[in-house]
Amino acid sequence: MADKADVRVNTVNRFEDGQDARLSSVEKMRRARESAGVIFLADGQSIDGVRLTRK
Image (cartoon, rainbow, N blue to C red):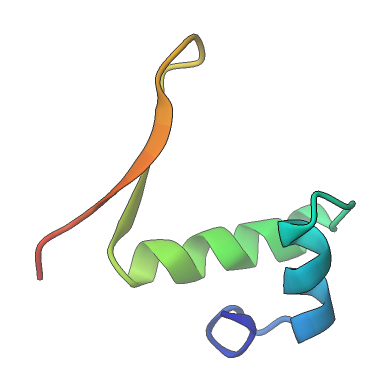
């Protein structure tokens, strides 16, 4: 993840542990996941999650 998002491994570890991360780093990690086929789902109310695209 760190390589694909161009962030440090420490950044990914902290984020996964629920600690603070820079918004720019979070956006990089999100884009890396999206480029790997992850779709983030959120309606702002009750439906949050992810799904994978077919490649």
